[in-house]
Amino acid sequence: MLKFLVFLFIAGALAIASAKQLVNKVVASVNNEIILLSELNAMPGRLNRQGSIDETLLLGEKVDSLKNNTEAQLDFLIRERIVSSEVRRQGLTATPEQVNADLNQAAKRNQMSLSEFVVFMNSQGYSLDQYKEIIKNRIERQTFFEKEIISRLRITDDDAYSVFRAQFPNYRPSVSEYKIAQIFFSNQTGGAEAALRRAEAAYEKISSGSTYEQIANQVDETPGANKDGVLGTFKSGEFLPEIERAISGAAENTVSKIIEGPNGYHIVKLLNKKTILDPNFLRYKEQIKANLVQQNFERQLKNWFSLKSQEGSIKKFHGESQ
Image (cartoon, rainbow, N blue to C red; front, side, top):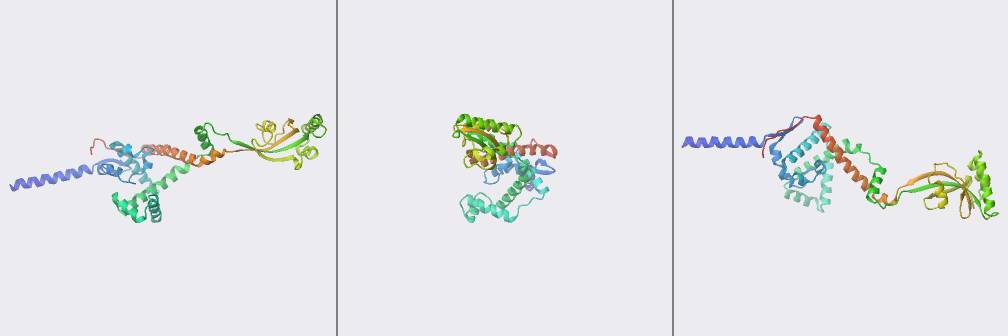
């Protein structure tokens, strides 16, 4: 009987040792850092705990994509280990002040006092120190992402405007703003024919080498004319359509041909032209750019992980079962 009990004791001990060995089998290695089967076995529990999964590492997928998918869970752990390795290599560290500030913000977002939030975290299975460690890791990863990926993204206003135009087919085109000078010849001085002849004479002088400014200062009939004929700055639609049609496609410092208007004749010089973005677009611009940054970040992060997988020593050990 004693021998039988000894046998049972030894068999039980071996079974326990075997179980421990199974739990601690290596399922992957990342740059000589191992990932154990026990970590993989803990993933279903992590999926049900708030804040335990850094969604940035999901590369655009939802948390649900990890449920009942051991291979996806292992890939997540590998990505987590790759970033942690880089964070340590670069010496990126979140300070206690940063962690506490983030903890307080988390409580405010959940409309709780700090003490209420700590109780809530306890109900989720976290001690305060454990949750602070999660915050610390997330801050350090975010610092790394901003340094290595986000800082290299170049999203321009033009990029955002292209998205805006695609999203809003009935958008109002960009408004042009023109600064112009004019030499005006009034029909009220001797009639329309006389005004046209004066305009033709002035245009001939400009074509023959006289500067636009010289002729403007000599013969411009604009009421209250400014020096050099400068008329002012106008947005598209704010001045005579005849003049706008004549200069809309012109280069800066171009002098128009004689333009007939309702009250006389104009010779216009385009001093400056610039584009003002659609006011409706300006309301959405920052949000569109933020979305583009997120989309480009996810793409670049995928590329970064792919590159690290090729460069580094990453191995999976298949054939293990949970």
